[in-house]
Image (cartoon, rainbow, N blue to C red):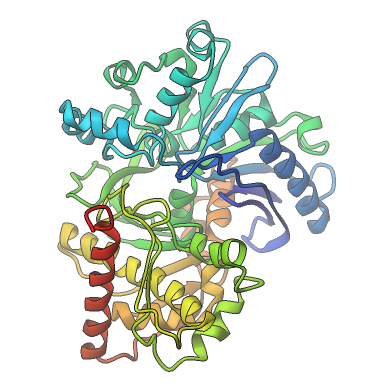
Length: 492
């Protein structure tokens, strides 16, 4: 058996797979979201560990894993979120600053005005945006009393969520190349922390984790940390890279979209880091030994989080699945569009100042319209990302491999196919993020080979486009008008 820990933005999922890739056990639990100020998003990492520890135990029990049957642990995680803790005691020194947090937007503007973006872009493949980890670490160093001195003395360390979970499991302060590549501090071509970037943000390199290949040994779990099991953590990757692996996109040109809190389109670009055009990112897909595989990425910040907002913020649905019937109850969107720029806009706009916008409201607008507009927005944003990727790669997309929780929504998957104009293919295991973590760990532990990853990918369902070109063009035209309103709200 292999345990996959998928530590996401709103909850932790743990899945247990056997060595044939068959799912044997699962468990899930949400944790608290903290919003101390507008645009600020935080997590309590002590709570994240408590939830993760409990859910891992529930999944192992659900699978009936006996002592000695567990072979390895794989970890995948919400990326860019920054944790800080005391390495001696394991005590958290501040809440985590979540990837959605926008408090450093002004600092990113300042760095851009001082001419740093070209260097950042060249070395990291990223853009200067508060989405990424580096300026979050700098904010903590500047704003938490005594933290800068503690970090300089080795009494405070930073890491992304994978580092925190691995530390709690094994006591090691490590990360993998895919997560390191999301920090604004890592040179993706040389494969090491960049001294100049660290100096730019006043981050002591000693406070950062050791960077290891994504496939290999990260440490051995302590029995008390994993319900009596002492096994290697043998695979680690950021959630989107793990999903790319779980979708068996192991060759250049293969890609996928994961529908989660946000949506992320990644395309395997091979052994050389590509120069991404505006609107896209270059990232590390995974590392195997001395070899690094890269990917082009389009990052959409808010998709599933918009559905959660309908549930928790507005109270117009009781559960996410309610949106499917509500959307299907209408013959059209009646001109209602939602741009879910609740934390700014990502690819291809990269506008941290955009704000959520609803256009087209009338007295006849009801909860079904808002539910449909939210689902449509998920699909429209995916089209924007895919078109940018097609322009960058020069290759038209022939089908979209889709995974994540939203693939359970048949109405959304059909609309995605319609508005994109290509088939949407859903795998047999929709949680390919967790599956990817398990496969990485399985390869890392020597349980199976990469060929096994390809051979065990299976299609569950396929959605073919049915919409005519005129209707597609009209809907996308009105969507772009709504996006323009979202981005121009300050001037308006």
